[in-house]
Length: 513
Image: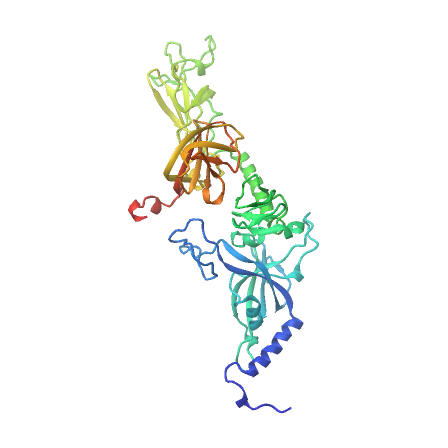
């Protein structure tokens, strides 16, 4: 074989490089395996931008969603799936029981891909965040009742040039990818939150107000899946006229253990609440002895007395009986809002008009609720109901839980207000607001003292046709029927602020905004 002279080749990536690179590419085509790649496009833009979470003009994988925590929590992936070829060493997944708990060894895969082929197929080099699916590892014999094969996903954690990929000319030809098994979390919701099985072909992607959707299609809006019930354009979910919540099987439901973990967690919480329903110490089962308000000595009923129920007798030294003024037990977290010895009490947001002496009343508009006793002239504080459920949920009415669980907004910069009487089930109503008035948010508020407060807000731009012209006044076409009968407050606002805010933002002077 006659070797060509070196002078015939370019010193940088010449014909010799192309010759070697072509053979390496053929090696991957013949000896490699198919790999499906979900291309990471970049973080999704928030609905409302801030300094630390800006809205970018162009979605790019180099964007950073949260500049404060340096995180890309809401990742967007290309709906098209790319097929590449890769090579890796298959290894056993072994459990490590040498330390406390259960750990998996060798759950990291190192895969090599051809540099030029990868860039030609994908359009860029592999980066951390790209997700790979290995079709040859699909599990067709899963224990799930869903009639689908479970795919195996891995996410790229690191990318480097493989040491074995350097040729005799010192140029690299291979990328070495470090892969970890994908877990169900917020970062990969764009991949996992999709219908699977027979409904996979009906998925039309994320909602786009400019796209026409046809009956039977499945779309995703704000992380929720909806089935199109009527052909529509520009009407956003959850408009019940055109959409209904998707009730089928998703990739997340068949791949993730989240549902089972939540079931286990809920069972543990239920048992914990049964064993310790409230924080602090239970004292209601103990009898509280009444004392003489003058001498401080115990007041007891004797067998020769006609009335033996000391809880129903007013303070009276002559009758040698009395009701206790307060709970006989003091300490940390003993107040439960109940009078001692099981005495009857009322409750509400205002005191009764004609109370009797030694009547008890629980004010439910206090947080925590406060128990009072009427001494004949005034209401005296007895104790606060500081004993709360141990579970951090919406039922636990404390300042901390009401803040942590609060996802509501305060709507301000109102440009118009009206009051209308509505009936449950109404789908439209007329207002006295001029049709020329425009705003960003349409807010409907229904207030009932002590019972509940209902507030529904719509982003006008997301619901085309929600505002119509009715002889120069605004007619509101509701996406969802009214749920309460009564007088509703209708507001058109241009701004909203989250009720749950950091102190640095909540206390910031308005001039700094």
